Image (tube, rainbow, N blue to C red; front, side):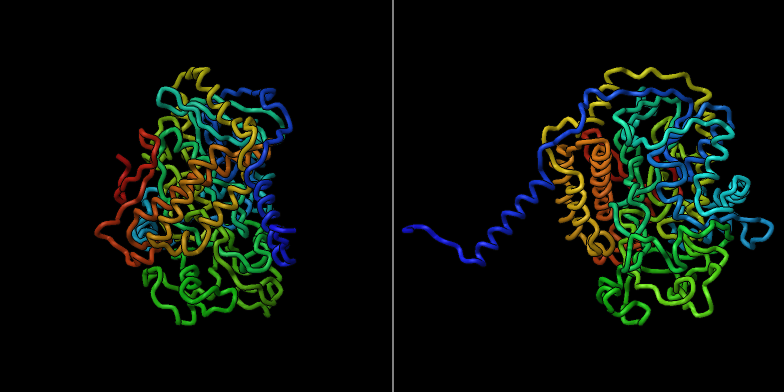
Length: 580
């Protein structure tokens, strides 16, 4: 026994717990890659079309329909089911401007939105929304969109009528660029061991926005895929400093119900002009300054919290009452049937009380239409010839850096999708098919399948969880300051440089997770760098160390792009201008 130390019970349990923790870390983080099939045996399917539409939401639907109607052979490739994935199922309000009944002209409407958005909106796209939204609403009415809760059947009506090819359950990971133009895309099927290559004369990205897979908001299948693959071929990206302020409930946060109950059980409806200054980070500021409102901390409505994000006096309203339009998920015609007289404002149908709200529900996403690819004109053409974008994939600043017009997100996607589709068809009509080198296609395929071919690596779920722990805290993502963002950026750079290149995948599902994780890492870097560059507070971007609006230096949007050396570069683009 001499020289032998026998641990007591407490020491033994501590050692056992440490060993279990190490073993658990090894299983969830770094581990051998037990691939379920031979990656070299995967087959590939090739497609050729004039216009390729990537995304199956509202923007993708109209892009495909209008491109087809303009005479182009068109196909849709979607990560999910048409009209049933992304944010389209959540949105229930559709803005439809009617010149016969509205008091504001389209120009006056754009000017009012611009005042609410503190100059961050692009009036070209705001006016475009007003001019074309009613026509898009009428087409949706003909297809039955406003007659049912789910969008798949009405979306399929024009697709089936036109016999537009639709390929669902495909994750597109790469855009193909040849001769300086976007000429197609590549990815893989989620349900079979197969890669997919689509060659096209023009491409319309309708891939939506994205987040960091938060709970409580239906954005978990969106990870900025389109933004990142366009960035990788040289496209400029904008709007990453803005934050969406949607909340959820502290009880069953992933149930996705709002002030009027379950949003998925409501039938969509139209609404007219109703301009606010909403869905910023006011609640996040309250939580930061006075404690988490969910646990009983004093709320901002009590008047005990001073300072915080600036709202123009013209647009200040009672935040204790639900907006009559309810945001994208609101009930545009007022309370739903069955709400009962006993239901307090913001209460559930039939009365009673709902659990308190909590923030971070859409963590990683910006205000709709405020982030995405930089347009060079009103058609949604990006800085890459042949590549168009629409909806939440286009940084159009239609509503600015704050949510202004009720129901404009869904309507804006329809309007922009239609315009981009027509423009892409016209562009394709003047183009000959571009030959793509076999070496480029081989390199893209190798990149797609790389996580499957690693003998060992980091699990994408573990890396995602690490990313969430770094980015989602209120004091990093929403209530910002230089020191915290710089610290978070150090973590994100480590994930980018060390963990992303060693992500593993054992099957097609994990292959999707691996690519989504990499996209979220790059998106996180963009958000931090843009937020650090904007040394002011404006709309949904708030900094404790720069709490005021700075019109002298910051009447400009921030664009990001990949430099010649592969590093992320940033630039200013003055409000109201097109990129140089």
